[in-house]
Image 1: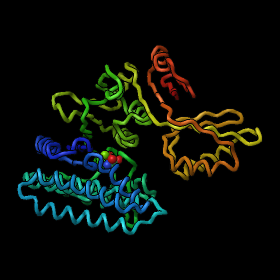
Image 2: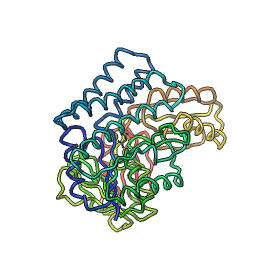
Image 3: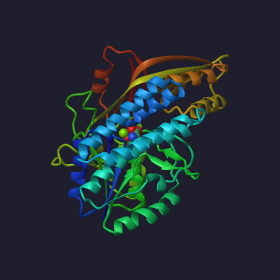
Image 4: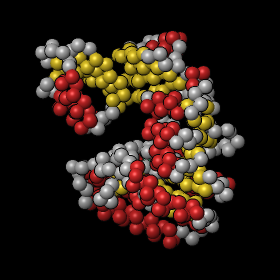
Length: 420
Ligand code: ASP
Ligand code: MG
C-alpha cells in the first residue's frame, strides 16, 4: 500500500532535522513511500525578499540576501557530510543559476515569481536526496516539475489532473515497483510550456494530496512540529486541545478560515478518494496522529478558534447613493481578482460593500486606484479577524471585551468577528 509523507520546512531547518527525516523514512522502508518536502526553514520568504530586491534593483542588499541564503544551505550540507565538497559545489551551481535568473526577470509578470521561489524546494530536495543516498536508502528523486502539470496561472497554478496522472503513472509507479521510495518537491509544478509554476504559499500539503489521489494511496501523513491538529494556535492561546479526529468537511472549513496547519486545497482530493490524512508529531513519535477522514462524529464536540492578524477592512460606497447592485459588485470582484486579493469576509448593504482581506500595501494601493473613480473607498487596517467554529456566546463575549467590533457575521456553526 502506498503512503505519502510530507515534511515541511520548519522540520528541516538544520542538519538534525534532515537526519530525523531520514530516520523516519528508514522506519517505513517496507512501505511504498512518496516523500514530499518543502523548502528549508523560511527559505520561500527569503526568496520572495530576494525577488523584491532584484526588482527594486537594490544590488547591495540583494547580494547580501543571496549570500545569507547560500551560507545557510552550505552550512547544513557541511554538517551532514564529512566530505561535503562535491555536494557543496553542486549546490553552488544551483545558486549561480538562481543569480542568472535574477538578472533576466520579467518584472511585469508573475512568471518570475514562480521561477525564483521554486528554487527553495530544489535546494531542499537536492540536500535531502544527497543525504538519503549517502545513508544508502533506496531513494529516487523525481523532479516535481516533470509530474505536477498545471496551467500558467502563476503563483496559484491549477492542476491538470489528467496530464499529472499520466506523468505519475509513467514516472512514480515504476520507481515504486522497483522497491524505491520517491522523493519530490512540494509546492511546484510546470505549465504546458515547461515554465516552473507554484501552487500557492504553503502548497506542499496540496502536492502530497495530489500525488496520493493520483496513486490511490492508503494514507497521507503531514509531519508537524506540533502534537497534531489543535483547536487553536498554541503560540497564541494556552489550554489548546488536540483534535484526535475531525471530518474532511470540518478540516476544509478550518483551512478556509485560515487555520495554518493544512493548506486549504489539500482536503478535497483526499475526500474524493476517501484517503485519510494524518497530522503527526515529528518530535514525539509516540503521540497518536490527528486523523482527518469522513467520520463527522467528533466535529462539534470542541470549539475551534482561528485568528488572522493584519486585516484590512475596505468600505466601498457608491458615489451618488445609488445601490451597490450586481454590476457594481462585478466591477469590485473583478478588481479583487485582477490584483489576486483573496477576500476573507464581506458584507453588503444598500449603498456600501465591506470587504476584509490580508494586508498587503502594494495590492491595497492598486485596488484603491482601480476603484476610486467610481466609488468612495475608505479603509481601516491592522484589524484582527477571529473565526470560531462551534462557538458559545461566552467565548464571543470574552473576545469582544474591551474591543471595537467592526464587523460580525454569524451562522449556526461559525461566528466571525473583525475587531481592534
Ligand atoms: N515552501 C513553500 C512555502 O513556504 C511551500 C510550503 O512550505 O508548503 O510557501
Ligand atoms: Mg514552507
